[in-house]
Amino acid sequence: MHPIYICFLIFPLYFGGPNYSDLRYFLTGLLILSALIRVSGQNTDIHYGRLLPADSRLISGDYYAEPSLANTSGHPYFLDPAWKRGYVILEGIRYDGLQLRYNIATGQLLLNLTELTGTAIQIALKTQNISEFSIDGHLFIPALPGISDKILRFCEILARGPATLAVLWTKSLKIPASGTTEYVYESRNQWMLITGDQTIPYHGIRTLNKLYPSVSKELTNFRRTLPKNIRRDRRLREAALVDACNSLTGRLK
Image 1 (cartoon, rainbow, N blue to C red):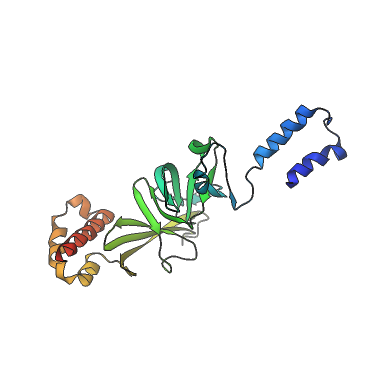
Image 2: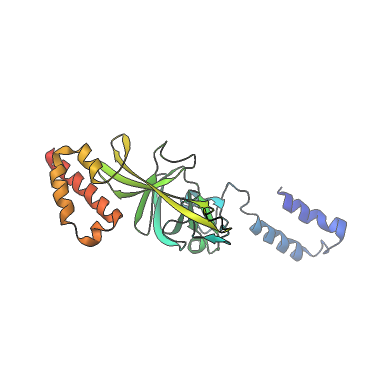
């Protein structure tokens, strides 16, 4: 029996309380406690009667407490703190239409349960068996071992193919050198090119020309034809270059 149940039963013996003959009071209190502790513990599975059995695999994880942003500049999330639509592939099952956020400071993928269960709760999903997720059209896969720190993190995929362009986005709390008492979320990113079983640092077209010298001329010409708005946006520019590289090298096979 859960400790809270025991406390509920013995409390009136010491301090007085409702008459146990009032069965309605007793049962009502017991039901309320049951609802409150239905899900407890830091690392527990959350099951709701309204969900299908398959969904209970997704809705399991740790309760997430919003970090305090007092005396803090910025936030720890990918893009911004707002909930965004996306999907998660967990153990080969794809769950669509979810409300997600990704805390890139802690590596936590957050799920809003409001629409799924009617409860205003957010949880940090267990990420060990997540093979892919998308937030607002941004695709993420697990970072390869050795790429990130001890925390399981995910890389955003900007271009996918024989050469895959990935970016590891992270943030950390820092105190500015000026010595102010306000903390700042400092952003960092690590660009990588994944080819087969190797992952190498990505430095733009120089990396592609070194790996694929047979198409270097075509890639250089392609870059010159890119519209200005794409050339000025690193994400769009590098994704377009890697996609073009995959297309050019595919024709040579």
